[in-house]
Image (cartoon, rainbow, N blue to C red; front, side, top):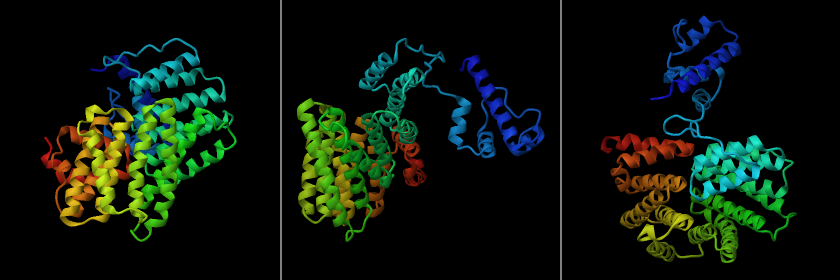
Length: 419
């Protein structure tokens, strides 16, 4: 049960928004009630929890996105504990709070990252600090797979034009990563190329700039790879060659960073690039399909037991599955396609669950569904759409607008077999 103070806050926010709507439309209270299909004597419920139709009508009235209005009415909940009490904001200056953000990131507490990042923003006094605080919050949303929210915060950070160049390029490459996850491929590629132009005048020997440039090459290569995946087989080779160039540079740079700093994040990205290169070499016509599929299948021996591998490296093997599944769908047919697709699809789902990667879940659901359509059969992951699978599917639909039509197809087809 909610605390009475929380209910009062919600009721007050709703009443204020109703006043805003009335002023915005220049209407009387009776007219407002008519627009909202409510009794003029009781437009707002006593509980402060409006029904869905009121939220939609009010959003339409003030011309806001429904999600933005709902957030304004309900407020933030991340800073509350389970019993409704507000968590205390820690004492400290900007740098001390930033250190706490990094600690929260290491333990995977993204809600705490956001809360502390917003505290950093309250303390920020310079363009550098404002950009840094917004980047911390944006990266927390990014790590949690909430990519549209990440875009908002990272774009605001990128708009701090007086911040130092190395900070702005770090922000922009993270912004490009969010666009890539959402399949805004032209935006992702374009931003990453701007990052490389921007870093050309900076200290390219520093670790932060090396990491920024390496990741920019990865985003460019990945965006080109995804463009190739939607091209005809005849049009793919030229674009695949360009993707290979960027992916090879990204792989080499991340391997060098891993050797020097022993950071598993770099190792994971380099390994993802290896699979993407195999896929693109087939699309470019410079590697035999059977050789590539055998290599991708062999790589999965590294994660027979997913618990033996951790972090970014474990997720990277999921992207090996995605590359194998994509090649199977584009290049094979009949029973051969069905067998290969089943292996890669099942392992992709297993690794997505093991890592909690929403981007990997999106690919696994989407390509698994395409596989079932291509083979004229039911994908095993869809047949076994139990409660946990349903949560993953709905969570994926919420995070990836582009995936929602496919998600609805899966839901309509298999809601009857959920448990």
